[in-house]
Amino acid sequence: MNVDLNPIGRVASPYKKKGDAPRQGRLTDTEAVIVIDEHYLPGLFKVEEKKHLFVLCWFDRADRTVLRTTPPHNPVERGVFATRSPNRPNPISLSLVDVIDITGNTIRVRGLDALDGTPVLDIKPFSREIDCPG
Image 1 (tube, rainbow, N blue to C red):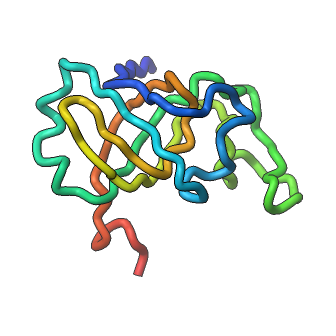
Image 2 (tube, one colour; image 1 turned 90 degrees about the horizontal axis):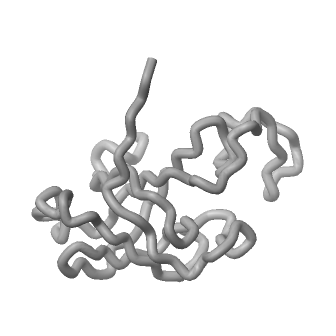
């Protein structure tokens, strides 16, 4: 099976190397910018109506060989699929961000833990009705 992914943009972030990023983006007030490629600009139509977005990124600097890890907040080894480690076979990250501003092809957000230059795979709106388990 072949899977083709086409990034829709890149992250502009103050985090330059792995040790710079927080354990979870939602634990900090740091701002970042998502720069959407011009080709995908029509996909941002009405996004400004949303206060929160899910951002899916490709953590291109992650270790893809990791299958077990020990989370920093709970020193018990777990399978990588039982953690939020950025190191995983397919390093797709999922971040819930707060939208601060949208101007042209840039989305300024809070809560993104991606390194500068990280490819953005997709953006989806947060919906309280379907994204919060009852």
